Amino acid sequence: MKSRSMIIEPFALAHATLVTGDGQGTVLRDMTVKVGAHGRIEQVAPSIETSVPEEYHYLDATGRYVMPGLINAHTHLFSQGRPLDPKLATPSGQRMVARFAHSPVDRPYIMATAKRSIRTLLDSGVTTIRTLGDVGYEAVELRDRIAQGAMVGPRILASGPMLAIPEGHGAPLVALTGSTPDEARANARTNIEHGANAIKIAATGGVTDAQELGEAGSPQMTVEQMRAICEEAHRHGIIVAAHAQSAEGVLRALTAGVDTIEHGSPLDETLIGMFRHNPNALRGWSALVPTMSAGLPLTLVDQATTGITDIQLENAKTVAAGMVEGARQAHEAGLTVGVGTDSAMTFVPQYATWRELDLMVRFAGFTPAEALHAATAVNARILNVSGTTGSLTPGKSADLLVLDRNPLDDLRALETPSLVVAAGHPVWRPKPERFDDIDAILDEAFARG
Ligand SMILES: [Zn+2]
Image (tube, rainbow, N blue to C red):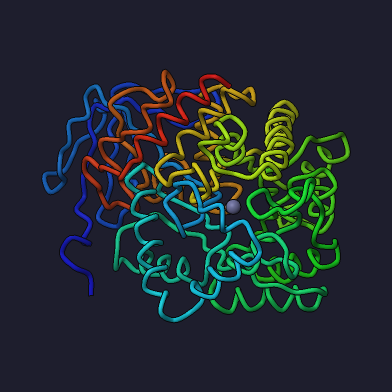
């Protein structure tokens, strides 16, 4: 049964300035947005042409900015984004944590952490997320509870555990492992049977768990294994994301039919062509989700502060440079580039989605309008939810933010929404839990570049 607070009361935001979220930065003045009891946008029109029925809550939004809710296409829910314990980087440390994490004793802790993460994401203006590597199926459970109206939260596309090779990236903490195409397919099927509606592959090694120089981007999964996973996922209409941090890894993943490349590498003409036209991808094209929020702090923040090992630092330098270069090239070539932060990773707080937009502008050549567009309409298209969300369009879910300042003038305005609405559910004056120490470190590091 729905609790009282879960009932959506229709409301109107009157006299607002609309930041439409298109790539040109279109702004419409003195507009009224009506949201119905079904939680969808009913009308978006000039205030002068709009009448607000008496049963609607009337909210005067004079001087305020209304925009579509943010979408974060790459999240994890298992931590809040404070630096991870460096001990986690050793194989024995990971095995130890994995034993705890997968024991029944720790299930309530994992669920509580995941709930806290999605609450923070919502409070920071994120109304749709994709998880890409969960401990178990906690994100699936939360997705269903939110969709059923049992709790308020962002719309979730949930991956469950990643799919990796034995001892590969993410294993054993947040991955199912397999050595052959059949095993890879079976693991994909296991996730889908548990309700996953996103799939994540570890195509190459990663920075946080690399033990050797060069391991971060070295290919781990074969084309055949990834192809088997893509076939299984696509058969169910599910898109596949691949963690890929080298040109060879990106090439293999795209060849296999992966729909989104996470992190990325420098691109050449072949790779750019494959993003544009990828016959094995679900929609015939693939997108890049750079996640500079996760890559850059490791190289821009002092090693004494990050606590990473020398090997991690060297790997991080290569990976971060490739990530930035790839994002810049993809933008220049007009490829589909989405926004994801890799939240929960070291120095990637759950509330800091706005920072990725800022980094796209600072480092990858995006205008603020293009970054906002990527985090809304483009992300919706990438995640196959553009019929439901991503713009302020009548008929779509009422996923929106009210801001005191124009985010196109300063993306930091996104940091403190005065109202977040998720599927018609309002969150008034949200106060996401913040880490001032981490914010100060990141502000300084990114400004220095
Ligand atoms: Zn990730």
